[in-house]
View 1 (cartoon, rainbow, N blue to C red):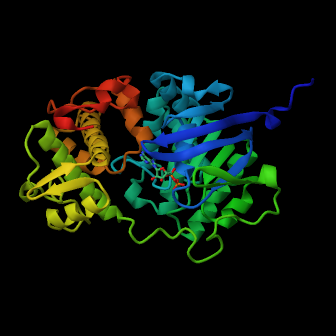
View 2 (cartoon, rainbow, N blue to C red; view 1 turned 180 degrees about the horizontal axis):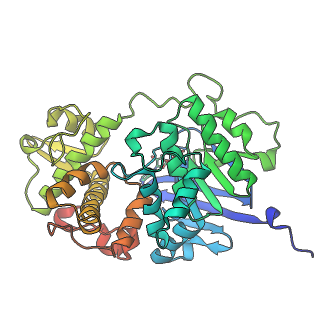
Length: 409
Ligand code: ADP
């Protein structure tokens, strides 16, 4: 039989993919494949498993059973080091949050990504920024760029290694209409240039621009243009209504997430020091003091909201981490200490400044960047102050990653 043309060969093959988180089945046996050069819009209500699927495809999360292969490589067979290489070489991520380092210029942000792949090449980084129309913004800090321009820097960074597979999780979710159009135009050009794109979106207009629409519901494939034909109506029960994409009001604000992280960090540190986390001693602002834009609030009030979302349990004057809270605390402590190492060792910033910057940096580091920084730094075991950095998946020591002092999970 004659070989299929490259464009018709599946680049991504997903077969009976199951992802289980404790008692929760986020993906319950999903099967589909994506051809080279296809643009797929991934849709479905909140909680249907879209991000989990993107994270597994990007090698940021592991699967429970089934098979996922990209370019013939079975992701479940890759070691942690091989996964880091896979992410660096094969995949470009574009997230809703831009995850730019605020203290580096547009050019340096792209060069930082090159650093994790191989070596830096200023001309190549500048070319990548010119391709997304930012040739005159190379030396601008993210704060001096509009949301659309920041997202374009993030796209330039994602494209620096010429990835065949682009994974985008609501890349226009934070943009106004004008910037959304500019970013979508870049995706159209990437599509024309032959990149395979999997894009999570809630927007039916964006989905219509893709070659194909796949919808998930409760972790199952609900609809696929390739199986059901293009005429099928959008399956999201809220599609085309004002409620489509509206997060439930119980969702916490970004400010609250930052307060939560600060408190989780302090409770974690009490655990490391084998001390009870006394609520009267905790404070909602960060260890380096109050952050700009975050209004102060008594710790007990914030902790009450945290107990409502099962991050902590409150007992008279003591706060204890739940298993979910401990996992998140561990991640934020890890990001903070890794960031301190990065600032101290790589940028030669002094201790106090490294600590202050790490307090901000810990909120914007993506899981992907966390692992790249850790790998780049050689999986350090301690921060500059000698405190332990909880190991991550990239450190290849999962048993040590799951238990630490004082019952932390
Ligand atoms: P979507 O992107 O469609 O909103 P997600 O993939 O984020 O959905 O989540 C699917 C389900 O898996 C949700 O119920 C979510 O709460 C759960 N989930 C996602 N990540 C985790 C995790 N790390 N631990 C436990 N449950 C998770």
